[in-house]
Length: 284
Image (tube, rainbow, N blue to C red; front, top):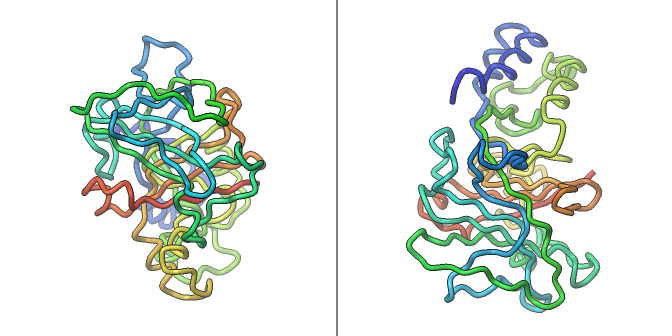
């Protein structure tokens, strides 16, 4: 990553935090890719898109949640065009990632996909199509309306951990209520920094409610009591793969201006085991 992509959060930390705390907090930043609408095609590479029709191989079946119906196609990313060298996770060097989600079109939102309910996990999928596999646009199954297509570009940026993420808790053990990290000015500056439509690949997730890593860890552990210390330990084993925000251009509204999150363990990502990715979603 270039220094310019880090400067905003560096400056924010040094403006609102004591120098020693600022440096410790900066050490928790992770590189991510902000996925943005391509407003001037041709000036920056289009790396993927929201909506439209997915390109799938002939042998790949459209993802279905048994007993509920087919999933909606949300987004696809061309790995060869992504500036993945800027990331600290092992995104494939080529091929395509396609994201699907049971979005409520078929049942008016009555069936929810939640980490704590294993029977619902089939309601969100990540498919990886290798570059050497022939593909073709797949017609959307009956009953589903494809989302409007929105081309995406990507830019590298530093991402900050959620202030109540287990990673922050580990670095700043037993924080008092008056710790500078909880300062109103610092928290408002973080909020302003992440304002706007926020689609991401890699980096830290930007949760709407609480740490998405903890939600996924809770589900992966079989939903133990929330005070189980294993949850924080497990949460540190998961990284954000992709975050798809509410986006009016794509006619995507997740609850009350929420976001979709796919997470994966780094070892599963390196092994291309996208079937082991887990999903959660949050809204305001």
